[in-house]
Image (cartoon, rainbow, N blue to C red; front, side, top):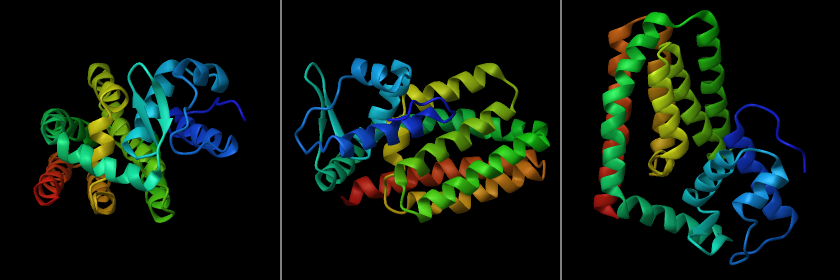
Length: 231
């Protein structure tokens, strides 16, 4: 197992844990290493391990049981669990998007005003990776890119407080973020919505960028609400 020493840790740690599951032939019901053991094994921070475990849990690979440990799940049954989680936590998801709708359109507006050529290159690269991973069916990696795309927009504001708040939501409160992207068709629609936002920021059009972000987040919330009402 290679040690993880590059950026985008959440994505890399998630993949590394999947590799452990495969290499050690762990089956549904088997217990995975503890957070502490994974921290030592992969030589990354505890927060990176926790973020990866959340991604794996909400995407149906593992189940964390408080006081007992982390267990491998049957992936097909895990996908059913994801759907049920979205239905059972519709209030949490609504609150999640209410806060993002307060913060992110303003961030997009500021990003359009302040983005440098280097900023735009980074945003375009992450968008391209998001599209590629989606085409390849690598959903956890696509979700990681979605999170990074939004974080980069926040960083473009040059407002440290806003960047920290967005990072906290993406890392510590990310169940809502991850689960929302598992609603049917949401990732595919995100491709077009991110492109509109990217173009507005590239064109340095603050109001168009803010509107694109508002519509993107509102569309995501609408998709969740429709999904929970029909399931």
